[in-house]
Every structure is written in structure tokens, then in C-alpha cells.
Image (cartoon, rainbow, N blue to C red; front, top):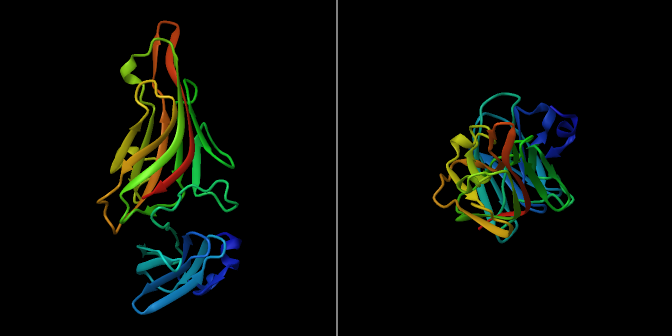
Length: 247
């Protein structure tokens, strides 16, 4: 366990003596409450992250409020010494904060980079796919749509069949699997079929998802390649994400 986690004290008391630790990422200034069986812990999230010394195993309810809006979810604590993670955002709040001065909510892999204003995913013959994923699963209970603001540029390298140009996808993946396990996605959206280029607000329906579960939001840029003799035939894709929000 990181020393920075141990040194933080919240309403739950000293984290070094906790049965388990619950890390809550939420909008700065939110009042965060963790409760179970009459035990209620409070903290004011001053920097977007709160830590709670959880005294026992079980299903813990986590709620945040800014005085007007509320969001909540449940988290299962099962093992002594566990560090559990929760991400809560208000509906119509952004899930994208690389330039906010706080810790980014996103992690990247493959040929991907996160800057102060955007996340860029690049896929080509040498780097077949790149991912951007929420670091922690988020509750989407009550949300109707996930909106991704992005610009996608696709370049054909060779005689690729027109019907194969679907390199980018947005996925909603259950928290009990890996953030990049797109095969287990419960919702998905193909972005930019054909030779799509330009600004777009990509909308993915997330209504009706299990209110008791949390999900990773994952965006994958991927290309396929074909080999024809000594000539490599492929596409290259650059997908620039400038915003992600739920409504």
C-alpha cells in the first residue's frame, strides 16, 4: 500500500489501522458518505479523492452530494487489507479531466497518449490497437447515454476493402473483468464507419444497465491489415478524444 494512502486521514480514522481501505474518486467539493449497518463515515472531497478506513467486510453504500445532486453505488469489501476503488460522477458531469489540474480518470495503453486537453489513440500496421480506459469502474445507474466528443482521421494504405474501415469502438465493460476485455462488453458502438473524418459527438445508449453494477468505459482504436505478396495493405487511424460525459 502506498505511503500517500496511509498518510491520508478521513472520517474513517487512521488508514494504517483499517480492516480495509475504500478510495472514492468524485468531483471536488462533494460530500462523500460511506455507510453499512449503522456505521456512517463522512468526508468532504477537497481534491477529488477521499479515503475511508472501512472497519469490516460487506456491501458498503457510497454516496456523494453537492447540495443539489446526488449519486450512489454499492461496493463489496471482501478481504482484510483490501484497497477498493470507486468512481462516482453526477449525471451530466464530465468523465474527462486530463486538463483539470487533478489526477486523470483515464489510463492508456498501446500507441496512446494523454495530454492536457485530449487523449490520442493511434493505430497502424506497426501498432495494431490502442486503448483509453477509465482507471476505475463507474456507476452508470440512471444515465441514458454516454457521449464521446472526438475527431477521427482514417488513412487508407493500400487497397483495403471499403467495408472493413471500422477501426474505433466505444465499450461498456463490467467491473468484474479487465478494462480492455471488449469481448465481455455489455454495450458497444462502432465509430466512424467507412472513411469518417471530422468532429463528432458519439452517443452510446447506456440506459437500463444494472443499477447495482459498475462499469469501465473503454475506447479502442484498432486496424486490420492484409498482406498481398510483398505489399502490406492496411489502414491507419488517429482518434482524438476531447470529452466524455454521461446524460
